Image 1: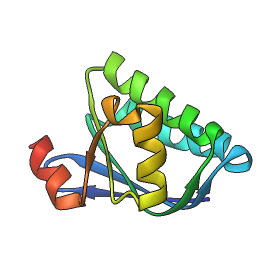
Image 2: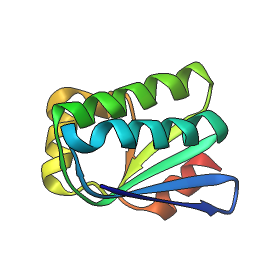
Image 3: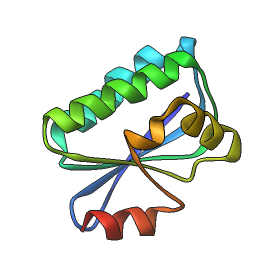
Image 4: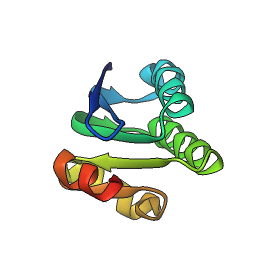
Amino acid sequence: MKLETKMLPGDITVVSLKGELNYNTSEEARESMMSVVENNKNVVIDMEDCTYVSSSGLRVLLLLGKRSRQLGENIALVNLNEEVKDVMEMTGFGTIFNCYDNLDTAAAAMS
């Protein structure tokens, strides 16, 4: 799992996940992304290159979603592939996160 962070206009921080969010990568991903959530008002998690999300990965996303709500911050998921989108829908994660097709749509919604 590789994480890349960049800023968009409007104080939006984008974290791009590359690879699998699974048991082996979840703790490192949680630590890195929690730091981003703790320090930024608007966070978009770009999952275009995230090929798989395990139950450990879902737990990481759940923790991030809960923390962002506690802080009164915005968090969104974008560019989910069909497999990951199906997992999100089946587990009810679509009610925890705002999910968008692309970064532009997410950024417009957060502005």
